[in-house]
Length: 129
Image (cartoon, rainbow, N blue to C red; front, side):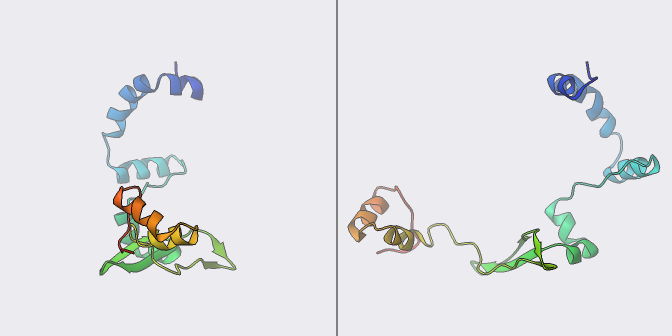
């Protein structure tokens, strides 16, 4: 019933009925210790809060900090290194509708066409024409 991966996938509900109560019997830290003692390679799955609260981990990964609507935001950065350096954030992500009119204008839509799209709710913009 569970001999191969395809059988485990096919019988996932039955397998979960067996495994979930077992895994709930210990904390994450207890399982990590158990696996390490058995020489099983493992690592916790961290939440974002776990990551930013772990100073050594924060120093070894790419985190981006920026202001968005007067609020400081921290998020995971680009994990790709080039010449030993992580890519940096040039600009914060745009707000919803921040560049709508400029993009439509660049695509060749007239101001009247853009106004029709805005009035019909086809597009959204923070600014007006």
